[in-house]
Length: 526
Image (tube, rainbow, N blue to C red; front, side):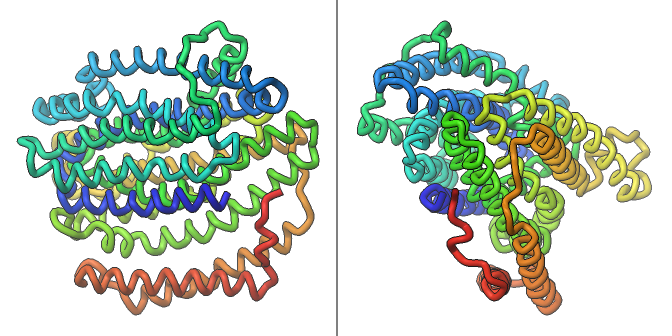
């Protein structure tokens, strides 16, 4: 896990730099809203095909062939899977490009009344949609490398994406008639370069083969059968995010950008630890299941749950309490002003509340996928998605009723949505609460099927974690009482004081854990 997290850490740090550069260059306005809508659609499909249902279906089958069959059978599986996945996505990509304006109308209906914004979003979508094809093949290569315990290279691959986006914003945008289009070209270039970056590693493993169509190949059929039911279940958070995009298209200008920045900030801890845990634990659980080792399976899952809580709880508390200082420090430059800081920090606090659930689902879902059980996560995911849709309407309506000014409702509720700032917070809060429902349903199924036996030491672990979190909160609250007006300070002052708070709170957290007996050996995977 350390090699994966190390590579992911580099990528996520560059991701924050990327977001800072985009905010500084473009701010939060109608053009950035158009870009985030155009990118979110193929990015949503990437999560399904690349990091969600495909990985959940492919890795267990790949592990089984790797453990039981010949090297030639493994090469055949990779070639047939790459050819089939690539062929399907080539058709999807072509349809997405051809129907870009229609897709935009479906997922951003609020822009229909603004022809210029609709046309810009469609043009951006035509550039970003091919990214789906290239990044999904990159994910296939990364899954193969992860199965051979080559975690560092796949984790470093997103660095290319971040560098391309930074170059697009700083170098290409000033040279274009429509500057925001530079980000679309950057995404297209990143998709191609990321795939090329993985190929030498596959060659060294003697697994680089030409893709071949394999729709009727037995193992490809198994992957497809496992994959299709999980299209929603494994990526509920992304489905919810896409539904948020639809609703946010009716909200005040800037809402799409604030939500996107919130999602990106949350992806730092989620990608660094949540995705890392899920990526590392899936091959391990699959191996224990194939080897008929229920005790090893249970121990691996127990380690994943303890580690997830140890990371997610303090991260959630830190993000909720430091949302304003973090957004101000990272983004309050150039065209991104204090009002944008307040709006983005509100949704960051709301969405961060669900971080523990997001991370724990990344651990629990592989417990079912490793056994090739796709039905249970699907049922839990669909239930959470429906709940999120209902909560979206409830929370946005409630906030509109509470926050509207006199006269805002004179033209009706729908028109008022475009006037009242802050309603995007309801979307973030709905996603957070729905993630806990997803977690609860998975946990109930896990206990009901007897897949997990709790290992000794949980009471001590939770006590240590609770006291360490209390120490972290005490430090942060004290610091925020002393330093409270972040948007008024120079950038250097914000950075220095935020660094002091994070280091002090982190030190208090770790020191409390160590004082109560936690040791590094307790974090080693089983």
